[in-house]
Image 1 (cartoon, rainbow, N blue to C red):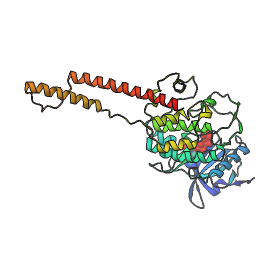
Image 2: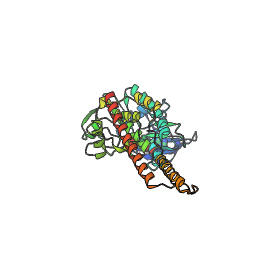
Image 3: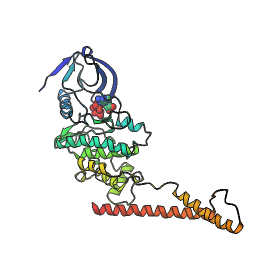
Image 4: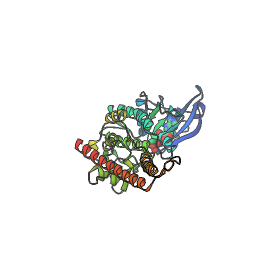
Length: 356
Ligand SMILES: Nc1ncnc2c1ncn2[C@@H]1O[C@H](COP(=O)(O)OP(=O)(O)OP(=O)(O)O)[C@@H](O)[C@H]1O
């Protein structure tokens, strides 16, 4: 094993502000004094960190570094000369995590085009890990770093602290979070789990929803949580009504949700399936122009005014004003359009149920 070198931090680096904290340590911005390069140092406080955990995280981070959508970790494991912390060094991300980028949109989401860019990068990284039989196990918006100011052209995955090989047995130590798959939410602390790629796929389904809508579909994937229960009822065809929050999504995007956010983990897609779907499909339904009915109403109104005018000789200059007859027709039109949309949704569900 590569030795852990003792380093006098003050001598080698100028350590600046804290960039983030996690359960296992904290990240600080620093400058390498000799090269003047800005870097990020990930610290693991000594008494709380087992050396084996630190070494494992460094090894996975360093081994995965060559991938263009994975944070660069520079060679070397270190220990501060006062023995208070282990640390390793990574490239510095000058902008923000995906969490901060989405939060800046005030729950509007980052939009379809940017979501596609983020996912092209993230799925490339996760496909690479899964091909190496590694599962990230902690995919969340905070662990996706956005490097550029506004076009999402450089996106990288970070934090390999929970990364493990497929089929390893691990103890469940987590508190439940928004990204946890249904099978994890039913687990109790210290219960044994076998590491499986499908937990990453579930988390990616949640991140996809979060990017598009600016919020999470539910707090916890448990039937005790109503929004999740509604989704599960729809998945199991016990309730034909798709939960409203999924309404804006296209049939293909719904398929992606069905194949990632399903409690039957063996049915979940691979990262490659997800990448293909996101690369080529439209993710939102085409929206009817909100003023369409209004035009119908104006049209009807002006026609009735025209016929009234033709008998009464009234001038048309005043512009179109909706009449009672026009309003009634518009309401009818709205009802027909709502009914047609509902019928289209039901037939979509029947078709996708048959496809499954
Ligand atoms: N290289 C970096 N450049 C800039 N900011 C970073 C960098 N790495 C991490 N951060 C910020 O620090 C936060 C915590 O980092 P990280 O997830 O690696 O810590 P952790 O202790 O492993 O967290 P967790 O509790 O998720 O396991 C990230 O969400 C991100 O906002």
